[in-house]
Amino acid sequence: MTTKIIIDCDPGIDDAAAISVALNNPAFDVKLITTVAGNVTVDKTTKNALKLVHFFNKKVPVASGAEQPLLKPFEDAARIHGESGMPGYDFDELVGDTVKHSAMEALYLTIMRSEDPITLVPTGAYTNIALLLAVHPEVKSKISRIVAMGGALGRGNMTSAAEFNVFTDPDAAKIMYASGIPIVMIGLDVTMKALLTPKTLDTVATLGEAGNMLAAIFKHYYEGHEGGIPMHDVNTICYLLHPEFYQMASYWIDVQTSGPAIGETVADIRGAYHQGKTNAEVAVGIDADDFNQWFIEEVRNMKVE
Image (cartoon, rainbow, N blue to C red; front, side):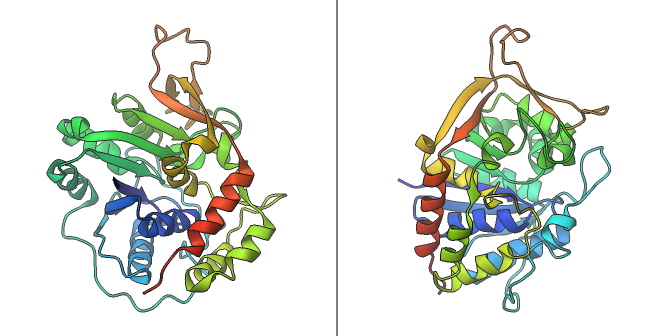
């Protein structure tokens, strides 16, 4: 049985890898891709999503979403992902365009028309999801869970406290975590351990045209670390396929929306402030070797038709 998912994203190099896996793995039925301003502006993230759908010749609708956060001024990550968001590979001329609806309305229609509950997979700022929940709260009963890349229990990557996706729109993150929908938080606590090693990157480059494309854009990813490069967003897809790779903990997550800690995700690790209730399953550990081997096999099985 396939899992029906919607990917809400800001491609972005690691988003591109996550989308590539999801589009090609038969365990998923990707019903919709929605885009948001994040790594680069929304016109660029939308174009990048369309490029990937066209590259793999998939019939997945793409809807363009929020151009800026709910309240906070927009700051992109072009310094990490390049000006286009997906540099390094010469994609074919685009064929096709976005659907006529905004991301929020496309989310609403897709979720409500689905016979089965939908899993939301946000890998960028959560602005589209917050707007959806605010305007159409009735969708909650049709969403099985949200598996979100974002947040950190420890050190952030935008400030000492905040991870990029939550920092970009902390007010949206606060709405999402207060929604009552089951949430899986895939944050820096695991994504900074799940590094694609130099050996994995060399192998990926040999795996057909899909591997060539991914290897080309990975070379322009300015987030290298000792031991490899993080593929933050790919961990959402990996978790859905292989939850056994991850160590999880149940916490109540609050989001800071002002002050020097803006964007911080604060876990009530003692269960002291919410009567013992929790609102998220938080990934706290991962087997990085398994992650690398899994990613290689996913790329090996990608088909470019």
